[in-house]
Length: 99
Image (tube, rainbow, N blue to C red; front, side, top):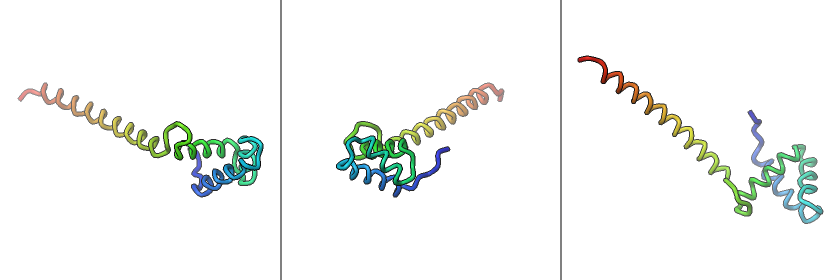
C-alpha cells in the first residue's frame, strides 16, 4: 500500500514546478530540480503535476474526486449484487420448502 504524502508537500511541489518553468529550459528539468529540492522522486512530482493539471481543467482526465466516486460506486454495486444473489438463493430455498 502506498504511503500517504502530505497534501501540503504535493501542493508545494506543484507550485514550485510551475515557478521553475520560467527558469528551466524544459518541464522535465523543472520537475527534476523540484524533486531533488524537496527530497521526493521525480516520478511522484510528475504525477502530482499531471493530477493538478487535470483538477485545473488544463489537461483531460479524471479528477481525484471523480476517481474516488467511481471507486465508491463500484464497491456499492458489488455489494448490492452480492445482496441480490443472497436474496435470490433464499427465495429459491423457501419456495422449495414444503408447507
